[in-house]
Length: 292
Image (tube, rainbow, N blue to C red; front, side):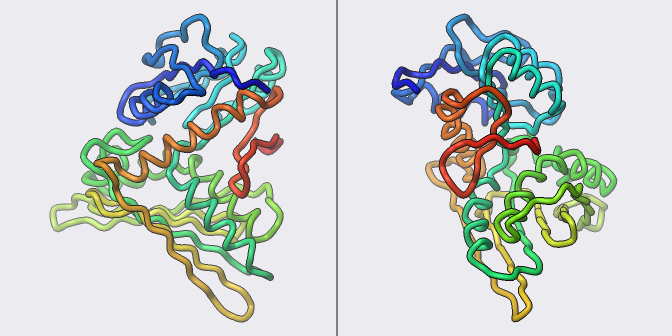
């Protein structure tokens, strides 16, 4: 471990990448070496690279190459090729971490603690209510990219495209409520509400894992608060807890939480041993996760 600043390059364009780069530049324990598009290489002297892709960006080859080039890597997208990433980490002695890029990480941390406090849980349901501003929210560059404002078919395709991004939240909740994590794959169903002309104004994507954890994301356009509601079902009844995040300083809470997760992970990733690491949402350090 070292107290020297970590040299960080941010690769990606758009609001979240800009915010992450500015935050890195403002930290005394970090040094921003560059903020560049994904198509450009980090400069010499960089130790860790933050990759901030949109849904349209393909980083399947980029992340393993950065690891092989001897950079630690944090990506706001889930890993594309876990085996290749793991092999690259070991070969170059570097560490990879995926934040998932979603604001739900903080909510999952809070609700996981609530779930873990309940005994003999039968089912957990987390409902996310998120309003997308005109400039979009990571990883969507606009509300229409999430399916809001388009056709029903487009909305369903858009929701399916990000289904894998919600897997981490499902598994965190499962581990908190049940103490174990299964190998089951999550299943997503999509419902839409449209106006009289067929334009979708609400997309509800319901993700179910092993029939005991449900994560329902309700997406609309606008600037409403970011809200999460956890319902815990046991043999004796149900309990509900709600967490709400308000905008502050003109910054959407979802963008703030996404950037926060990246920033909090930089130094632990830099100081971790080679391999794929994850943020354990119950505590404050990184640990190896062989499931990734």
